[in-house]
Length: 189
Image 1 (cartoon, one colour):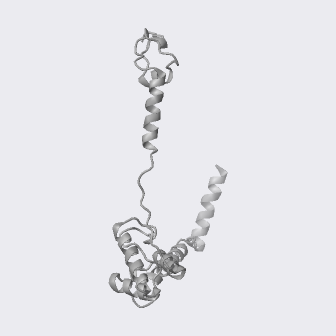
Image 2 (tube, helix red, strand yellow):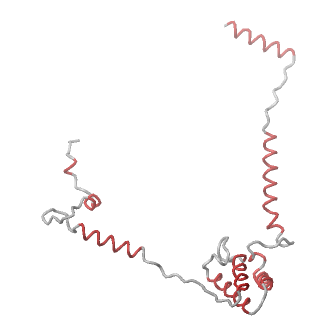
């Protein structure tokens, strides 16, 4: 392989971009844009990427601060049925928006928090509650993790007991004397 000086290799586009001079050299080959043009393109791209996206904020006016507090409590206790592990307060899903509107409408009609909870659990089941009450239907939901933990602990204890040190077989007198003879012969060699 012949030795070719590094300077004779063509520079990559990235190297050319990084090594541009502040002043455009019209006679230099490959210098199609001045540095200021690249800076302008970069600023334009960054401005477009950082432009604020349109965001919609829901606002529900309340006449009574107690109803507003009840609304905030309810939307933080009701689970979004579409999302994974989110309340309807945290979710942007269409169903969550509809449920928030339903909660607002029911509170504006004078319904209590318990009426709203009863309506939601009757319509969607106990799963709609982020922390469902302990009853016959939700016992597995509450006691299942504890049962799995207990099963895991029992399995670990059983495995640990089965892996105790193995019991070495005992030798009778004839086998013990033969072993001693073999060991003495090995020491003499």
